[in-house]
View 1 (cartoon, rainbow, N blue to C red):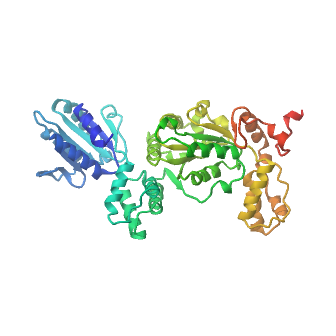
View 2: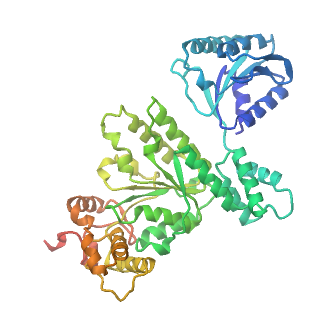
Length: 494
């Protein structure tokens, strides 16, 4: 539903306090002005630089930077049988004043009698507690794919400048989540550089946009599943879910997976490789960056990050080490901020209809509440165990090639090693100019340094999680019958 349509409904229902959250004020003002012209409503706009003005009526301009003057001026716009709208641009900068709060409260109440509507146009929602029950919030959505294509066609006017078919779909995927101005800039830059609109330039601009926001980062690497040894069942599950999805029905779209494992077993690397494998961008959500110092700021940033994710669909979203990100759930003195953020995230996981595949990783399952991993929030909960002998052999081959190490070298005893430790051994061999066996003396496996923790998580996952290496449920000790590479004694030997 467009901004114009939603605003029309609220004005007709006589909502006298409306807050529009928008990063594209010119486009929002254009839609509001067109609505007022079509319905013959009075319109006035105020901002700190130009003061109060009425489009189409130069004589009505009042060059006043006083926000109180602007609020009081809306009464003069009222007519006996008409509707008047006052738009206050970036008014979140002035709304904390006691005088402004009182003036807005009075105007919103009086507006019911004379149909005068106050509209705050702002990039963020910061409503004082005194006014929270008096404002309704409308979000100005990012442009749709159809609108992005229209923008692209308006810029690429010469033949051959705009691709078609699958290449055009790639451009629109890259532009998803950009504002109208950002999309125009990205398309124009692409024309200047390459004489046609390409997805690569749009991705470059989008990466900068996300970096400026500070809430999300975009990963676009060249790694795919060929550079990730093992995890056959997990790879097959995610590829089948993403490549055979039904775009037409949101109820049949894949939701995501939760990955549990000891450190170094390839959770983060899997997520990055998954994006390349299925042709989707990988967004990384850093929960720590959502934390704010002001009351309500963390929750607002969480909602904003989730809206950006929805706008950038189709994509893969990685939330790494979720158990540490929401460590405040067990009451460590953050006044319930972590619990509220976690509740917002849980609701989004359950209710979102965007084509977003979520990959969450965790090392300590005891810090996650049981409702987090219930069905319909994730398509599967997988446990990534220490690699088997066959998986280790595949990992050795990958990193020997990566670091250009001769395969005739004798390999060290890699009992209880993870994939990260095999990579570390190969890297240290090259860095220190040592044979692999000597470089291994500098590697202490996490299964040794944290043996109790590793054994605890493997015991917990047994019967509760799917195995990432083979089809079916993970069973602790089962791999010991197939391989003697394990942590501690096999319970079946007792």
